Image (cartoon, rainbow, N blue to C red; front, side, top):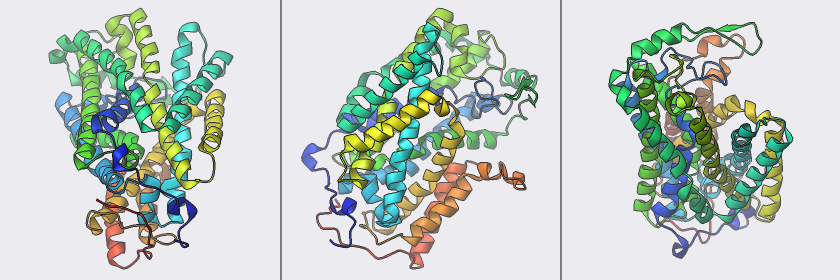
Length: 486
């Protein structure tokens, strides 16, 4: 016991009597994340040409070869999210009753696990909270003529962050309650938009969208640089792009499956919660988004023949006034994802800093999130969070390898910094972040060299951990009295 850090030694598993069914916790909360408009309205785009514009970096976006290819990529990405990124963390949480920050000590060691995926992941969640608060504030204040860096926006963003942090501190049951009804808002909006455009789906011509995209010429923020879309991607490129976008968006939530699994009753809860809340919600929201854009273009309702962002076409489909109401409702429905971020952050701090009042630690994190939102810094954080997403591919991969090598059980905490985990993470992260590394002078040739980078990072983390573990590069196991594994 003395060799264990206090945050590990003090960890107590969630008793079976306090576990809840998948449909009242895991599925609801994950569905709330995947129904967040920030996710689904970019599915037809895949990769934005210019921030704030509804155009894809690649002519035709993910619809360049029609709906069939786009749906194939969407379904494949959704299944990858469930089976590769979520199931193992979820099973580990369910079997041990312990959160990610304790279970992760097997893969990264009790010292290394404190840093990652422990304390660091908690800190990063406040970045997500800041982004959510910033954009929710924009949508809620826009009907009244106020934008970023105004007093009303600052007040709304601050109240939003504080409310989400409070719900996160209360626990998964309360987050799930918030996620019970609010996700119905984007669901209903998606259905309304689909019904309004379904008649045009059969007439959708992907070649027309590609041609319209190729005629675009935009001016970058510097007012000088001309920006035009690249050539349309081949079929495999679209599938890889969707995997990159969807898995990158989901990766941190996948690792957090531990925190949901520890509140589940059995393996069926883990599987059903993921299949419905992750795979099902991803295919539903992303699929309707693709159909709406295709229907709008095929039915002649798209005022901009090159626009691919679902929300940018709403005014053309349902009128400006109704679209304004929809935007307002979508902002309100963004609250469950904010609560999710706060919940993960609260779990991190409660676990890694057990002697600190969570209202103090999370309160400080919330103040930082408010500062980022109010200052406008959170509005520029997209590229930063892509790097963060890439970092969780090798984490999930290494955890999966560790789980399988241990006979589908939790191996228990390991001493210090587990070399197998850290080496596999470093190399996996380099693979996942290759497009950012390519921005370094002299390394531009690396851009685009790794298709579906988050998935590739997972595979690198998985394979390297397995090889290094077989080579004896795992640190010593430490006894943990009271630990359970079912």
